Amino acid sequence: MTFDTPISRKGTHCVKWDMMETLYGVTPDEGIAMWVADMEFRPPQVVQQALEAMLAHGVYGYFGDDTKYLDAIRWWMRTRHSWDVARDQIFTTHGLVNGTAMCIDAFTKPGDGIVLMTPVYHAFARVIKAADRRVVECPLTNAGGHLTMDFAAWDAQMTGAEKLMILCSPHNPGGRVWTADELRGVADFCKRHDLILVSDEIHHDLVYPGQHHTVMPLAAPDIADRLVMMTATTKTFNIAGAHSGNVIIADPALRARFAQRMNAMGISPNSFGMHMATAAYSPEGAAWVDDLMRYLDGNRRLFDEGVNAIPGVRSMPLQATYLGWVDFSGTGMEPAEFIARVEKTAKIATNHGASFGTGGESFLRFNLACPRAQVAEAVSRLQKAFADLQ
Image 1 (cartoon, rainbow, N blue to C red):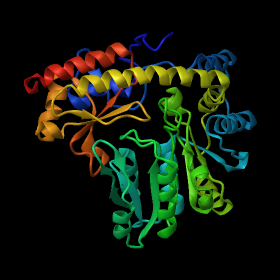
Image 2 (cartoon, rainbow, N blue to C red; image 1 turned 60 degrees about the horizontal axis):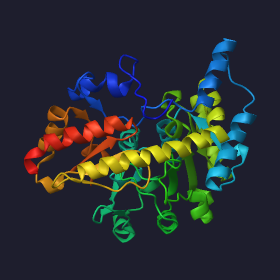
Image 3 (tube, helix red, strand yellow; image 1 turned 180 degrees about the horizontal axis):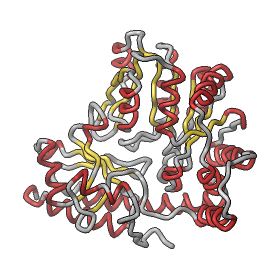
């Protein structure tokens, strides 16, 4: 299989394709699904083989002896990110949205403020509000298509009622790889305002050539007493349906608080996810990711060239992730108009920028993790939908 091979996901209970018409009015037969952040690619063969071995055995009981699983995580973090993790620091959650919810539950109380750098992954705000906590938006600065942090402005916003900050690193939807200096700035901000820092690094393997992701424990080792790390195989290897993620906590006191809530909720891992993650975090998995990023690099170049040729439309340069963040503000159109052109004329389903919070209103997010021919078709449709601007 190559990444160019099309794989139909229609009628497979795939949310991206099978819910597109209900949510967007775009039929899967005519439309292109570029919204949900999963890929149109099969995972590495080593993951397929792990599942085939489970199926061949045919008994699906409780998972036990997680030594190989934990050591696979430790090997990956050490080999790919130069980060040493101890086994007893790793908790397995049902994905990282669940991990985020567990952190909110363990480390904050109803009414507490939780800081987000917006625009940012929309599930954070959804979970915060559902938990009866308060979203505190600290807007990122869009400096000519480059997102930056404004700590002075954010300092002025803090009231003392904020208890936790969620960092998205690399950033979704902007595709920024934060520098080590920026990450140290985040750490210092959390120290100044006595915030626990939850660093969601689910995209940390999806970094383009010439870029380098630094994990927060290496950027700011002095904040271990307030740092919670979140990582996963699911985004990297396109196995999101396994609903498996890792919350990694070095500090014993924070770890005890999180463990107490895990035990109170009766959470234990899914055996399918454990086997898939163990297989993925391997030399074979690493080689697949390297090939993937070379392919996605070609996709982002094709996409950027095509959409940036439309007057008034600008794609933010991606340093990481496969999620194109496109600004339509230069067209002078209101969101309702450019959304209608994308969905009704081009028949492409995307994520609406406003759902990512302040700063996202003039944007749409496009998923580029698909065969290149689909990216090319999407570009062609977009150029036709905005042809009157040429």
